[in-house]
Image (cartoon, rainbow, N blue to C red; front, side, top):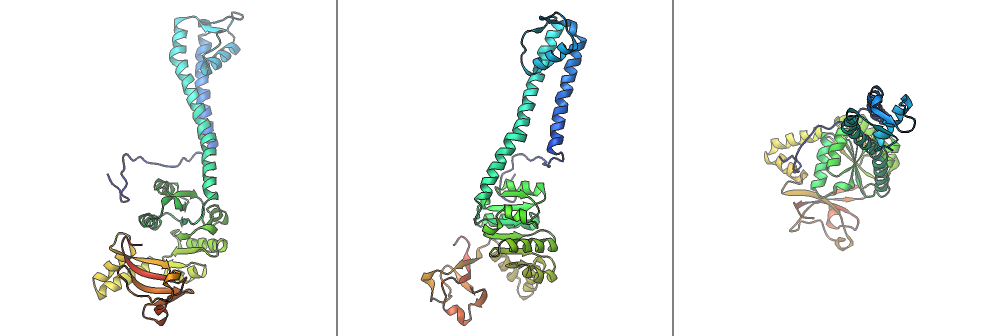
Length: 343
């Protein structure tokens, strides 16, 4: 079966983060070990006449506990031995599997709570220390997922995308794509500092609530004054507060949908072409690039591989029909339409 990302799904199972704390999990494992030991001690005590103590010939309760612990964790020292067939069968068929089970639980606990956690923490620390020129996505809901899918489709490496969310299920989906993920509140300074927002290339904010998205934008702008930030807001009234919070780009899907609907009244092909421009799957796409020194002095004109639309100079947009577009300057940003697959 092929999912919408084009990845083959071999076998899917439900995944849910454990609601138990580390200490609770350790307590459950310890309780299971003690319960098994208790059962073996009880059997050994009631069958103590089936064992021989080569030291004094008597099997006390302390001897039973000693023999149980030794036989459950090792193969024994031979100072106490089973002398009846029933006792030998019990040790062979019950105690030996329990001994193997003990080793697996102890080794698994050590790996899960010590080795694996320490290793993962060290690896993530190295990744965090070297994060630069990356894309941060705050909020991995429907819009955040689509944004990440589109970024990857446009050639962004999944490893250079960092997803922030407070849903373990959402983070698991992003992690499956190869993205770096972090469970955390993006409105907090510590969270954005942990993903090195100041050295990021771009921040996409889609928190689901306008007030939360604007607060994330305020926090990010405070930490990274030069960071490009795109914020999704649902209410038109919140577009101005989002810009005041420091957003470089404010996206309102309701307004955009209204533009598409209005455009369809002027011609049925207009919305299709706008969608074509916005998606990497279309025949053409919008591209933004910086003008190099070799292009300085040239006009913004149509070439065989591109159609110039707008020049961004000192933060001011200049249309292709305006005088400022007749002579490009080094450092200008050009927005143009290019065939899909062209750089």
